[in-house]
Length: 118
Length: 111
Image (cartoon, rainbow over all chains, first blue to last red; front, side, top):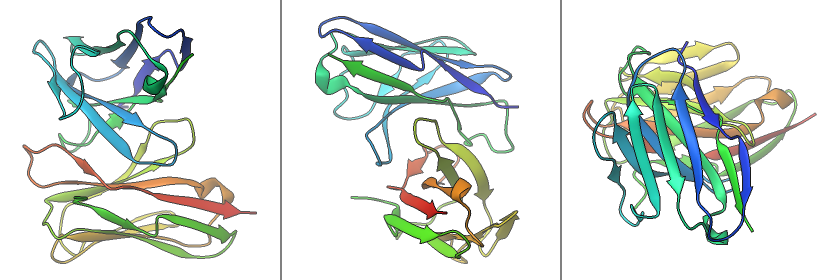
């Protein structure tokens, strides 16, 4: 149980284009989803928290107009990187909390999406 | 300011050796979690500890939560190459707070 999927697993795009990444909870309802960015051999950097049906809460320093988050249902959240630039290249990981797990704060992570902007 | 510190930051050991990874804070947490992340994949939850002094075992992995609930340790016995990965501790102060991640310990087990 508590499986989270991400699509695509990797994507290469040209500078200036937009890229959408999907995060789905497959066997539970995700009341809250989180989006992280991770650089090689470093920890996770929280970008934003989203609750189903409401606007995402962005962490300080994260541009909400550049990283658009939509949590349209209890099983799906999307992150759209708009007008991507090479410095946006990174590993993006989503996680979810919700009806699965013993503790409501236990996060279940997706496999991540490797974004490369050329 | 890093609310959760981890040590060591990097660790390279031979197969069969034992090791301990530490997660420390000056703050009290209601719970701590340990995750393992392999390259190119998302973190996988290993354990959650909630009671001060609690010890949990997962095969060759032993997790301990400090009595004051400010620190935790992960001990691996007879490490294997499959244990290689980034080990992250994460804490929650209250049920209403977001999870705080430590900087991670990168473990490499050499065959």
